[in-house]
Each structure stands twice: as C-alpha cells, then as structure tokens.
Length: 421
Image (cartoon, rainbow, N blue to C red; front, side, top):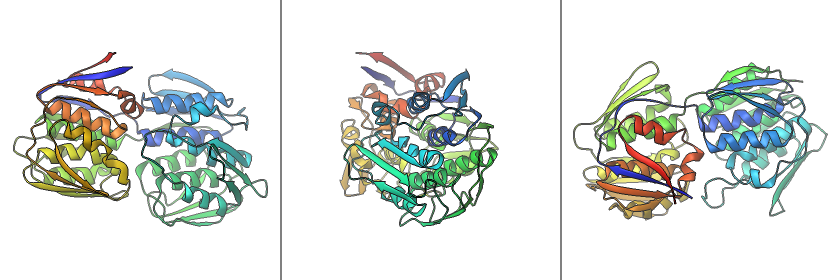
C-alpha cells in the first residue's frame, strides 16, 4: 500500500503542463473497438484508468503498442466478441462504454457492472433507454452482469430523448449509433468537451456526427470506420485542480496546454473569490495575493460549474472570509470527503446535496484518506495549504485520473512524495 506525504506551507510557483483528458481518453479508447483498422491515439494521460482500458482492449484481441510517452497504436481488426475479464471491468466506471461498442460492432454485449470511485448506486437507466430506442433488448435483472442484444441483429437509428442530462448515456448512445442502420437523433444530450472530442475522433474515422457540444446530436450511420491519428483534448479538471492549488498556496502558476474556454465556469468563480486569472491562447496564469472572498456555487452540467471540481473548490471556500454555500446538483454523494477535511480543521455542515462552509480555516496537518478521485485531489490541495505534514491514504484513487501529479507538483515547489507502508 502507498500513501502520500505533504509538508505544506510553500507557495506553488512556475509552469505546469496539463495532460490529455481522462474522460475523453476512456471514451475514445473504447470507441476504437468500432474501427476495423489501426488508430494512433496521442496525448494519452499516464493514469490507471487508461492502463486498465488498454488491458481490456488487449484482453479481447486488440493489438496495442506503446509508441512513446502518451502515444499508443491500437489495432482492433481482429477483436473478438467475447467479454473481457470481469476483474478488469470492475476496476473502472467507464467500462460501461463496452456496451455501446459491442452492440455497435457485434450486435450483442455482456459486461460486468462497472466499478471506479464509490459514489454508491449510479443508475444507467438512460443508457438502457438509448439502447432500447436503437433496437436492443437489455437485461439488467442479473446482479453481476448487463446483457444486451440487437433484436434485428444490428442496431437501427432512431430518436433518443434523455429524461435528464447524462454524460455517460450520451457517449454510449453515440458509440452505439455510429454503425447503426439509418439516422439517430439525440435530444437533451450532454455538452461536455469530451463528448465533442469523441465525436471529432469518430468523424476523423469516417463517422457522420453533427451537433456535438449542443443538446441535439445527429448521427448518420455508416457501414465501416477507418483508422486515424488523433490527439486528445487537454483535461479541464486537471487544469482546474492546479488553478485552485495555486490560489490555496498564494502561489503563481502558469498552466499550459489548456483550452481557456473549457475553464470559464471555474475561472469565473475564482475571480469572484479574488483570485487573479489571466488567459492566453492555450494557457492561464493564476495567482493570488490578497484574502479570499466567500462565494456560492451550484454544480451543473457543462458549461456550468463541474461536479468534478466540487471537492477542490470546497477547500478554497474553507479558507475564504465569511460563509459559503456549495450545492451539488449532479452527485449528492460528492460530500463524502467532508469528514476528511474536518480532520484538518474545516467547518462544514452537509444537508442532502448542500454544504454550508464557514470560512477562515487555517488547515492543520492530519492523516486523511482519498475517498475517491476528486476528493483525493482536494486532500492534496488542503495538505499543500496546511502547516506541517499531511498523510494521505488510498492514493490509488488519485492515480486513476491525474497524470504524474506528484512529479508535476514537485516541479513547482511542492514538498510532496509517495511512500510505501
């Protein structure tokens, strides 16, 4: 088992480069299953979710070759239609994209229920609804597996209307519909940047997808996809995490390889709190000198404030003057990290999906744990801001989504290291 040690109190200063987006990476990697050709994917983050995704692809017959750092060749011409090992599927949430990929290519799928961070039960009813509209019969009666089969042997295009905005459901519907007979129209679709990235990748492979990035997506099914070389979009959540780390430590970070437009909701709230954010073509410069101001935040689907930034911004709200309110309209279970922050002196009261945060906290070092991926990032930020040594257990959660985060933080002045215990 590994843990992370942080000796806090140092301002972060320098340049830090953001890696490819975790959520785009897993969607694009599983979408390569649709391509009976060779794809080269670039700007892949060095994270455990990507490593597991590649292992899953190899387990079903894909030929995977690591070309160099962040660059992988994937040949799915000889992929078989049998299910990957259950233990791999259960290690990550995005393994449910196998349903869309297998249905699209083979007309049937059977996968284990996905794993990943423990947020409790996260329903896939909208995924099932989308597959049903495309002509698949989906069996969710078993406790261990989900099975689906195209009634006509192949999916057929149709209208899909999501009852609520679902990122995973939108991605799965796109993947499933690309090779379907006819045209699919998705209404009330999610608009996240990684959905646009997936559509761009598939279009480069010969798909016909329009409207990605809006709430209405149109997909004209094609017979076959060809290979391509594709570079993933930068990770806006990684960028946002470093922006908050700079603010929490009264530092000055030039954060490179970002798309500032993707960060607008984060930038707006940081500016409201008194943090200086200067935007460039593909970078932001974040610094803080004065005191932080209280703020109210409600997470919303993109382009609103992202739920994946809830724990990190909560750390900054704890340090601000006055009372702040943080409401999560996406995942109510996000607030499991609160008990860990309280060990470091935070004053937070949670009621349902709302947290009331009393500011003015000077974090004290403590032994805490990462209860999930983004909560682990919040513990790092709090540890960097605290005086003394903070120990973070269960750091493997953080490595699911942050590429070489320890090395990146050390390079800009953090006293942080990973040790075995």
